[in-house]
Length: 548
Image (tube, rainbow, N blue to C red; front, side, top):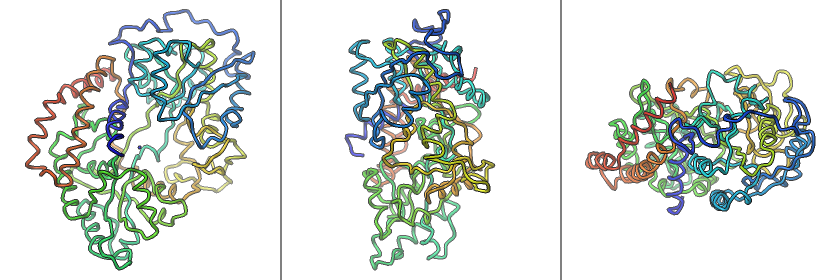
């Protein structure tokens, strides 16, 4: 979640993580790897499903995973030890810095089977999954899902109406991953617009409810010495950064779209690109006017996360409004974590600034061709997806790192009917040796995270935001789209260029370097030249195929 060198990388990631579930083959043609072509025989080293230990004898498993600086020692970590004990496995690790993971994987996959670990735990792009499948370096897990899953089956049964498997099943019918599926209300409302309540109170203003009221509040922030330091020019009414969180919130008030899904919109099953519409142009006009009136800082287009954090951390507050998942971007000791309040701004046609994305399974755990006991590796992943280990992977050991709340304690989401279930003791974000920071495959439904007791002002602020936001969940959601390999290649190539161009034009139009109305027709024409209509056609046919 940038400097110019990182700008293109972010765009690549945005395109490649369009939430596709792919295969190494095209259409419905079966891969040579398809395990269901064989007669299933359980690995004799395994005990029966649902019994412990999982293995009759100690089996070594080498895992390559992303290094996390907040895990003190992966070998002595309590979660590691729990998996080893109950699984009767000996885990060996190859820890790779996150920035090096893609390079490391590509080198390894091109070097042959001997260089592979048994298991890869990483959030691979779907392009990588397709490539590694095509090379035969990762194996399909269909038979294991059918015959050797215990905890996964329990989890899938709980959410059977959501048909989770279709999102991790490639177009050739194979499943290559054990996912991380963690329903979380607070994460589904991705980013929220926040406004500084003390400034509103000082001006006698109510919390804005419309785009017009918001612009008025920002103007008054600018025109008055809100922080009282004698400098009437140092207030920043609205600030953003290169990920365009605030822009994305505001543009949703003009046209509802899925920001991280190539800005696709949906209406009655038909997809469209939001950035081609008149509503998008209207949103750009609004933002451009904010920028022209010095209410929206143009440095937002060049500022990275650390720079934004530094500005927000200034004890002499200068910022009136920003967008973030919660107020946790502010220093942990800052009282402003509870003084910034959420706003939902209404636009036309019933749209609001709500940014919502439904929980989807994240491809997380892959078994390689080198693994001598692939069913053992699958059973370990299956156990990681139990409710006990899913909770442990995030909160640590029950009774030590978290406790069951006392009778009468309320959860953050009591107002939605979720009872208190987890009261954290171990602080998230600190160096610890109790859990894996949610890096393992896992499976949890809403009541787990929604049953958490608030231990931080930013958590409570997000819960307060969702009291407002939950009523604006859209009726139609696109979510992940399952593409074939050929569809992926063509769609990705087009959308890389398109998304790059759209981001550049947002900056130009909003900052006034180019007039949005004068440049609109040329903008649309250029997108057409980039084959944006073909990309939409591909997305629609893949989406329609998923509904069959």
